[in-house]
Image (cartoon, rainbow, N blue to C red; front, side, top):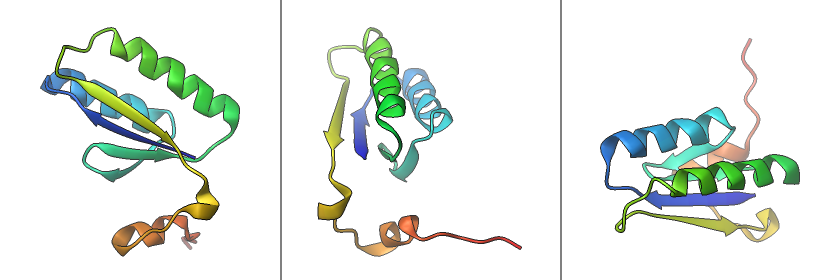
Length: 89
């Protein structure tokens, strides 16, 4: 699992970045925090896409990626429901 946190000043670039994360399987946890739980290959592809985006960043923009061990993760509030399966009938 990786957690991606970003602070991008330009509205248009921030929106494109957010859409790219969602399109590639990341789930929004908070306004600028996403999680991606997937295979190593998918995570590596995401890292490459983020690296491409970083070429457009200004001096005040940043992205931080945390590699998280799901077994050592503690969640509170609404976040605890993200790991539960939901069945729609």
